[in-house]
Length: 195
Image (tube, rainbow, N blue to C red; front, top):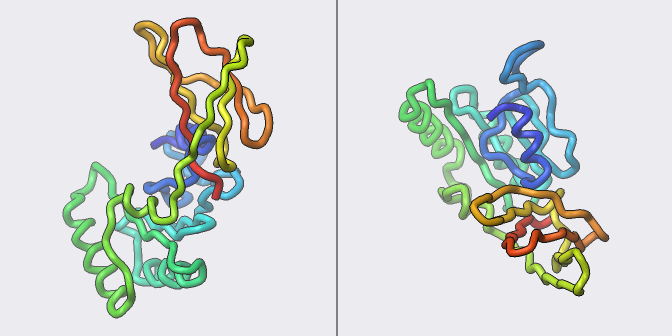
């Protein structure tokens, strides 16, 4: 993913399973030198990435025993809610990278409580879905009220005839957003709980 797309996703999603080490340079399309500036979003440090509630490591061909040990140390500090993730690159032999990562993690994790999980399962531990209360008061706007604070902005999708697109609701207060739904259109709204 390009850094500009990652910055756009930072508005909606507080985690990234495939962060890159801070590499790149002036004029490079894949310039990852600048970290995300969103609060409570991951922060890059070398090839390590930290979330307020988890430790993520990426790029298997640079992941070291020290990186894996660091992830377990941080997990202990946050009460066992950590995630150790790794990513490869489609121009490399992914099988070799996955085998190397598996061996490395298994060796460092020996004797510790941990388990393998896919991306969805790993993040669902402790996840409480947002419950939306949708109200229309007869005016031009529909109001979307969340039952808890959300991370960043809600993602709003609109299906209007043959068109499906994303749009921006306005923030009315900490838990409420509003949107003027086009006549005959359908909308869906989603968000991730605040970290």
